[in-house]
Length: 218
Length: 223
Image (cartoon, rainbow over all chains, first blue to last red; front, top):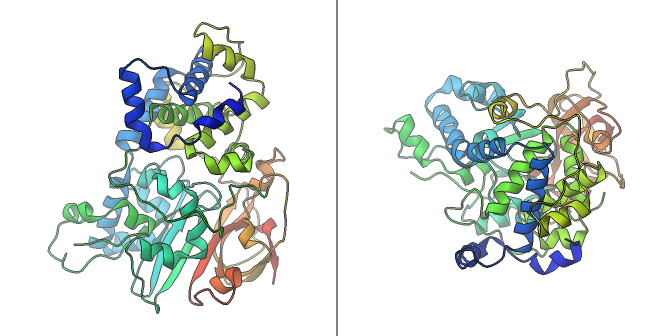
């Protein structure tokens, strides 16, 4: 497959899933990129460089086991346990490992706390570094050019579009993940949640709040 | 390299659009690309920085017109071709014929299913054990170098030649600007450096806001 040939397929974005499914059901040929990936995978298997069972295990891990619920449990614990919160902010890597959340794309985790004085948000302008162990794989918008280009130059504009109003007296800190250190935001605990259990609190915490582009609502 | 991947501060890409109830993968080929990239990474033939550099070498117009896993696929193919583990002609033949020949690659052991969990759990790509003295301490004023290397660097364009303050010392890490170019690990301290928004973006920026960038000793000079 030449690279020239692929250009006509470059605008296949994620919204064409239904089309692909439909083609498949009608026995239509695979798209250029499907062919390309299938050919590469089968060659790697034949060469003994990948084990198909390991591929399935990797996919299952990140599709069903690791995800933002991990981070939400950490946040809820920090909200109810002041000593844990202190440990989390001092050494996020160790505090999160207490929950068994370790692994790739999380060699060192730094947790930054949103307060009435400071709003933190996380980006990776150069690629799409993201704390996999606590949030799973990053969403498309986090990996997209609009977010990666604008988060550092216009964080307040991005936040405002996403419905987060940051008062002008509150400082905005943007963390550009240019190393292997991963950042997670500890969002503010919303008012009116005083009587909630840790499990109920964890239900409120969203992925986007832990990236710093949303607030948690009761 | 000053590639299309270095997006910080660019204009014109439009609004950030968050998809509701987004699935982890949108296509089967994304699942497969993700998995073969991770699995082949564990062969140890390239480091994470070389993996990133391979993606950065996608031609700029193509990079901006394609999606994340297309960048991954381009990078993986480039590494496999460059290291002569897969030949372009082999892939082309395999697309047409599922039984086309596959030239053997010897001396490598594929990641097995039962090793996946341990591999993910113990994966340490970049933290260094060497005891290297830091050149800076928290609170030090620094200025970033104005560099434009043709190879891999983790110093983004928007933060070059800028004054900041060391905010966190992350300890000793492999230096991507050498490791990504096959020039060795060169372990050294990595810091979160705080840049005031007006230093990066001029007087129009909100003066109380700041950007933190993780940078290494070799990116910095005293200010």
